[in-house]
Image (cartoon, one colour):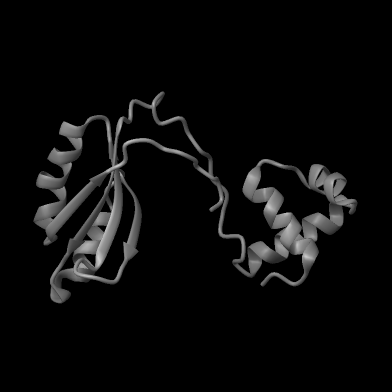
Length: 146
């Protein structure tokens, strides 16, 4: 749980750069590294901070197809279908939503052809139907930690 303004400021800095050391955070916030360490450890233990990750250049990784897919799945198949979806490395985000289609996920692949093949060979067989695919044309901004 975020206790005060210092916790909020620590989180804001870590969202921008998860590699900051306790010393760097302490300097930026005019606090001792041990104070920062204790605060960060508490927020990790309380699961306010769930983890740290990197942001990669997907173009350099050969990933040029990026899409959001909304779909529906029968209630009786939902648990198994979502587990299967989560097991796919190409799926980077999974959401329950309101509306006609109750599931939305983000999927990435090397090409449009690979993306469509993945949907047909790996996702539809899980029980998803009524799919709507929305391709990402351009990433305007990507804010790490958000």
